[in-house]
Image (tube, rainbow, N blue to C red; front, side, top):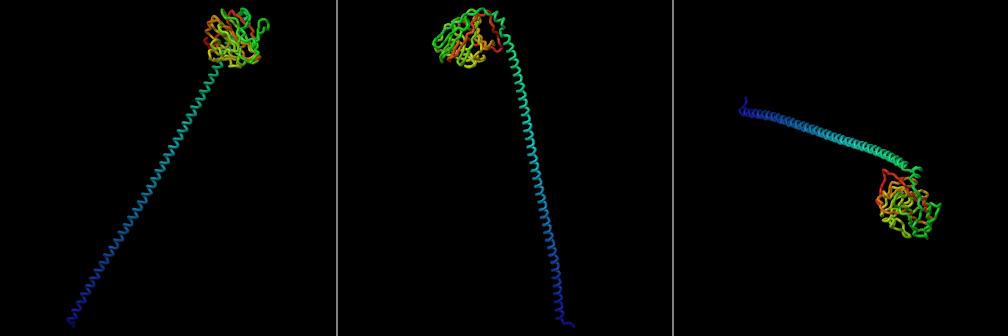
Length: 332
């Protein structure tokens, strides 16, 4: 038989066991909750890790897309630049091609222009030659137009320098003895008709010229006709100023300059007031017009040993000159 104290102790032990069980149950429950919390925490961590990984993945994808997009943009920019470069090259080639075409067109036009100019010059030369042939006097025409020879006499400004001699009763010769200029004129006054003189120079033709002078004027010793250009008109030799006409301090080109051995004619028409020049029978285009006063022929020479043969002085019944398309008149 248990005593009351034993029962009390037993109850106490039961109570303690119950509490222990309760505590153990509570601990189990708490452990379960803790485990649950741990699991949830772990799950949350895993979820966050997944989210982080997903975010990193997406960020990586975004970066890749950005890089691809940037690369695509760069590629498009390169393509655009390359296209512009090609377009620019094409435009440059087009411009060069156009420039080359224009240059070829200019060359073609220039060649055509030169050919046309050459043809015009050839035609012009042909016409001039035809005109010259027409203007060349035929022997029968010359004979019929000649009235008579006139005696040749000169005004000698410097007998110590100028020798005047007869050749055959018609032709005369003027010879220079000193190195200095002198101008010799004929005494014959040119009026009332057509007068023609033919001369021929020899040796040194430097500073040599011929022409007409006012009858009211006379050269003095040592004068060159070019220094008196208000009183006379001078037609130069080839050796001096290449056939230019010198009058009133002005030179006019266009005539052929004459050389030693060539026959030079001057034909003065007092009615028309013209003085026309011929070299070896060929009429020269530059002539003098408007001479409405009495004039005389002259010759100018510079150097010792130079000579001028006056082959004839004639009065013609009609002129042997004609007109040129390129003729040029110098007003007296």
